[in-house]
Image (tube, rainbow, N blue to C red; front, side, top):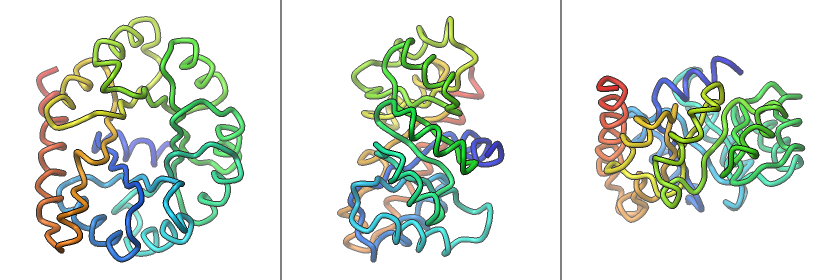
Length: 215
């Protein structure tokens, strides 16, 4: 579990894939990895998500890419995707039963929170990190304010994160950022132009690294 979380934090960027087509998934994952993004979250509302996770998890050597499940709202979904090969689970909200299942299976769990109270409840329940969501609406200052009294709780910013503001969230104290449409261009994937995704991934990673270095 610690190794998985360390690998997520090392890159500092989690790619959120929602509704991705099965025939595009491996190509997108390859393109992201080429750009430096090695943590991929396939959302649970994607058709046949367990099969997709099993496919992508089996397509990379150990340590190349960390695969997880997002938008997990119940323990049943968490368990099914963990058994399929997911190494971490992300939720948009706080669900103690999901955290309990992840702890039982030794998987990283990152529930969604908005308030300090939710962050404390999630961490006390056994979460490894909390996903501050929707980060774009709340702004970097929200994370900075929560990190003041709750600096012991790792926080990831997701929702409305782009290359233009990712560095601000890292500066505010986020250990990583999660990004979907701002990172993955599905139209480019449809055209087979995966280089576009690689370049955006590289830009995200460079912004995060620069913020860490400057900070």
